[in-house]
Image (cartoon, rainbow, N blue to C red; front, side, top):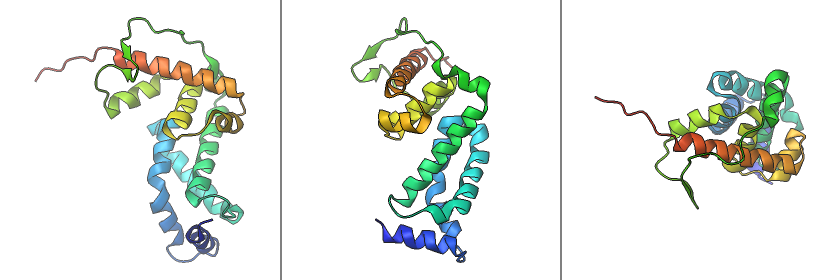
Length: 184
């Protein structure tokens, strides 16, 4: 239990000057990154606002059982997942069939051969079906275990593993594709 987190949460609950701003500044960058990876940059700003509005309303529920950042992360993840679920036509793509083996992709034990920059990865992530992207971000980027992802998304552990496998295959395929050469 972090007494600093409890103190900050209490200051937020009582409306102490600058407390919520302190909370926002400390946690917004990571939460914005999570939102971007889960729902895309276009919708991430609105969802980040929702996350902090929800945190403001629910700060009284924070009991210090986990770090305040972990509590906010879980809140943000739930809001992103709910947002994705509310778009039922997009949510239906969670189990879209992807080929089991990409064709013509050169990989090593460490992954795709070549250098991958951040923009390439963001573009490739954006092409994934919602469910694959969500599981990939939660597992490979944020470090959640399959049972945690299953609980959070309401899916079986095996479904989480399958979605992660499909996401990795699709990402390898997208990142291994030749990039256009831009002449000066």
